[in-house]
Length: 183
Image (cartoon, rainbow, N blue to C red; front, side, top):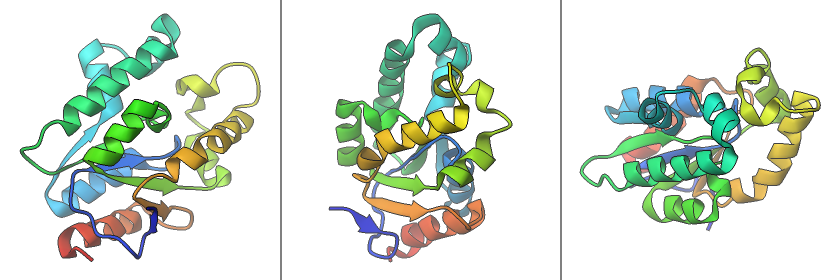
């Protein structure tokens, strides 16, 4: 059952999901530091294992190949039961049905929701490095189409936090409060 930011406390490893530009990595790092937890980014795990950027994997081997690497990285990290941590995922991770189910069963999934305007402001200078926004068409329109396609799946998350008009620190504090106080 889906809850709002005022109705849940977190008890497992945290998995941050959401669109490119919502702040998953930044918020995850800040929150992990606040709470004394480890922070991992699934894209960084993949890049370190493959020795190349995500954009190169997409262009050389395709999205299907990348999604397999992403699933392996996220499941591998969530299988580490010896410590609590925060994991930031790629924007499309929840679109892989088996991976989505696994994340929901094996972590507290937090959807960082943001408007198209907020997302675009965060990524407009670097959108060329985002594989799903670089093909034909206007990148902001593609971003909107991706959000429209993904929103119902993101809303399966255990918790949704709206990021518009909040700083990364404020969002991290919302998450940290639930970790530290179980509120």
